[in-house]
Each structure stands twice: as C-alpha cells, then as structure tokens.
Image (cartoon, rainbow, N blue to C red):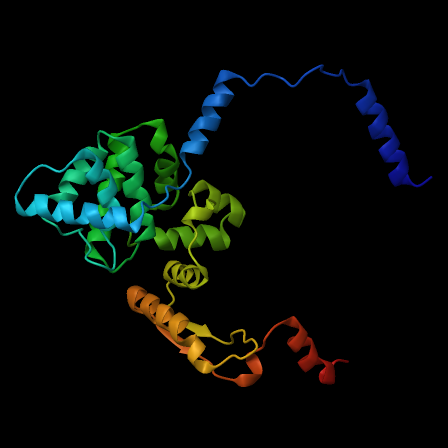
Length: 272
C-alpha cells in the first residue's frame, strides 16, 4: 500500500472518531448580522432608462423653478450625474442636495458611490470633487453600511481620483495580497461592478497610467464582412474619447480567425 493510501486510511479513521451532529448548527445572530451586512455591499442595479428620463426632466424643471427636489428623485439622480446624454452634475443645486441627503441616508450614499465608480474619470472635475466629498462623508458617518468603502479608501485612497488609481494598481501588481483579495477588499469582486471587455481594458489602462491600447486581432465568422466591425469600432472609439486614450488597430489578416478550428488548421503546417 502506498504512503498516500495509508494517509487516507488514517484520515478516515480520524473522521470516524469525531462526534456526529444530528443536525446542522444554528447560525448565531452575530453571524447572521455579518451575512446581512455583506449582502448589503452588493452592487446596485441601475433603474430603467425610461424611468431615468422622467426623473431627468423632473430634476431640470425643479432646478429651473428653484423648487425642492423629491427624496426619491435625489437618490435616483446619482445615475444621471455623469451620463453621456445630458449629464446633470453641474445642474444648479443638485449636487449639494444629493450630498446633503447622503449624510442622512445610507441608500443615497451607497447609490452615489456606485454611480461615481461607474463614471470614474480622472479628467472630469466634477468626478474629482465628488470623490473628495465622498471621502469626507465616509469619515463623518461611521455607519457599518459604508464600512466596505471606508476600508477601501483607507487602504488605497479609492475616492482620491488623482492618486487612488495609482495606489490601487500598486497593490494589484506588487502588494502582499493576491489580486482576488485586493479586488474583494475594494468591492470589485461583484460582477455588477465589472464592465464589458473593452471598458475593462480602458479601466485597467487608466489605473496603470497607460495612454494607448492595441487591438491585435478579432474573431471572424461565416459571411463576415468588414462593415460588421462598424458598431464595435464606434463603441471602442467612444471609450477612447471618454478616457482620452489612443487606440492602435493592427490590420493583419493572418491574425483574424474564426475560431479554434481555423487556428488549428493554420498551425498544422508549422506544427513540429
């Protein structure tokens, strides 16, 4: 019998000696509370576009009339602050009203943080100013519901739009923790906070301080034509403009394949 089988036998004997519980242990109240708090850290989904359009019009009307914003509209307005279509971050009185409510409402504070992360840009003065306001908010309101973001800001200055990304990148690249641990501690292990492939690449370049991205190949398919790339290339260029970066596209036919089968076929002649 090998040493491995002997070890397994010893392990099995040890397990048989352990007392057996007749039912699963009841989770303590403190464990339940920790689970609830962790669930509350989950990313917040955006309201429907149609709903946001109605709220946008209402916010603009209230601002022009110097009226009082509705509480629900203020919480939803965070998703309209930095949109490509008619952003409201500079709407008179709106940002001050959102921040005032965020000091009283965990829901508004969390929504503001999520909207800020989605719209992050070092080049937007409003984003930079709001990041500093969020840092002050986290210090002034020591509520457990915001503990995730308070810890993230302590660790890497997450809401310092100028320096935070560089510190974050440093921990990802050369910190003592794994990448997964760093991302989890900063709240970025939630799939709703992850963007699409292009946006992820731009976000990574922004964090690492790169100003250029290269596209070396793309997948083709049956009946493929060059015009099929129009829409994704337009999306790519829009992101490049948003992040103030350059995109270099390498147009070599040999790099563009339809799938693994075609890749294998192309490699066969040089396979050794």
